[in-house]
Length: 566
Image 1 (cartoon, one colour):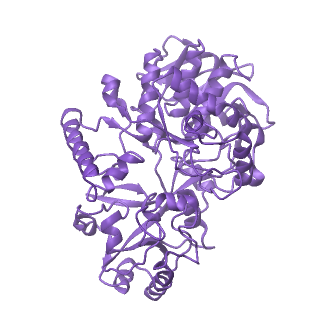
Image 2 (spheres, helix red, strand yellow; image 1 turned 30 degrees about the vertical axis):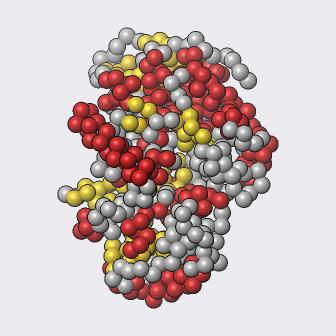
Image 3 (tube, one colour; image 1 turned 45 degrees about the vertical axis):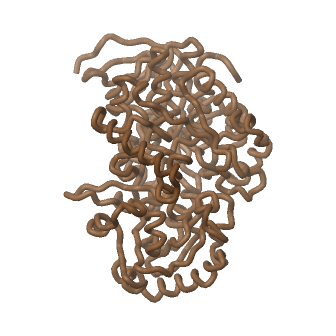
């Protein structure tokens, strides 16, 4: 490869997720010359594949809706969540700047948010927590607004779609689930399917974007409107350091090596290390081999930012009790040796569904948030980890679905033939089919059913917490999360421990500057998103606990690079 002429800018941002694009847009709005590079041929990173929620206490949408919240309450909650890993200075910076970040992006860019008014914090019963209003999500977006750039948006994960169609959080999903019970929902669903069919013929994908895809598209469109160069297929191979200060990076662009001199600084936003198998093996004790854990983040998130920073003396923090944002997932066979994966967020909290280990026993509250449930999967017993299964009766599977298996009227045959969904006419037959201890499973279901008919779960208290009830079936009484398993045949899906990103990362200060082993800032080097060690100490306080800090620190870093703000 031959060297090209050196390119100069004020700021070089590495990565096109929410953290990277938020930094680039903020810096550009402050008058800086910005270049964004991305090693993948598509933009959006983990953001485009995510639920798209941002956890923002005291946000302006909640204030406009009359929901009361305070910085003090949120700080109290976060301190209890993080315990000895509470990082007061960075949490304070987040809480101080997050509402202003939301105002800035709604005022200055294409980004628009909708409020999760009824979306509670994950531990809403903890002092300082909120019963709703802290999570916000990007409004749906028409990909046609991107023009030819629409083809460059990272495609959805196959397992997270229905024949390629993605569902939006909130009303969109509720309409699909209620299509057989509501004329309005049936009409809405029919229109969505027709529109999707037309999009598929014309564009090869759905052009109605929801969740993280909508956020990524809105941010990208905003960057394009600001004439920010975004170079895809452009990995960074090294940092340029002069007299202890990062002055830019070496990139591979259009097949040639190129030096980008960044006079103000380089911002690492490469998505953490969920795809770095060697680092993951070192810090994920439950997964000594790659096949024991599935990440839902892009495979290209291989810790590039961490390695680049470590090569010049940066320090990392891998001491959190949870080094990843855990997520229960299941493998979905697609035929011809191919497979995908799906997350289990909604099904676990529904009536008629429980989770058991291979010994047939329940081990945790199935309705808990995905991070807590995933942690229970990983750490429920010492020694070799047991297999975990979701088990449901026929009524529950036909009404709510189970993982990739969709509810009625979608037939179950394909899921059964592929081996994804396991079935038995009786509980004992299901146990034999799945490799679960039959006596243990029969006893667990009998014990559960004894109280489930009254809507109670004395053993694990499913349906008692606000978050459990939020994910349950509001039309099911007396407990939206509890119902007996008594209508055969019975079904099971095997779960795997997984993640949606990593919490361990580069040590940073309140301005997002990367720190060295002496806890001193490395001049000219910043990190945001999952390249930055979690500001919540490895805890997961609520929906959007990754994207909220990512965009907020992108805003903080962009302003710091421009010499404005504190």
